[in-house]
Length: 101
Image 1 (cartoon, rainbow, N blue to C red):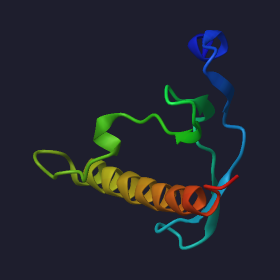
Image 2: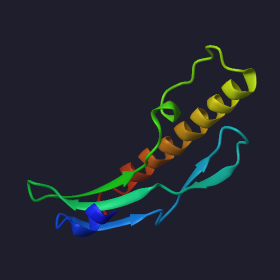
Image 3: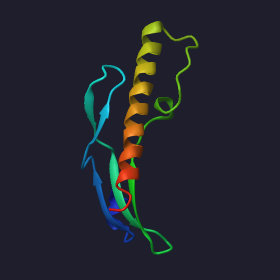
Image 4: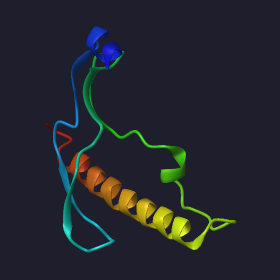
């Protein structure tokens, strides 16, 4: 965050500034996803780009494997992965729809 404040190419940034609605596959109900960061950046070619950034551990980004885990742990990891996939699908749609802002 200090880097963002000090970098002259970061024109705007914020943390959990807005939400993206999504339907959770766990309960099939609407929820709100607050991405970790939003940045508006002046790229090296002079173009202005906007980014929505989420920070997660790798284990939340790849499909879980059963291995030697207890059943409850595996089920929790599958649920977390499914929820993240739904959030990121909604975020992709949001970004695709707002690309010209």
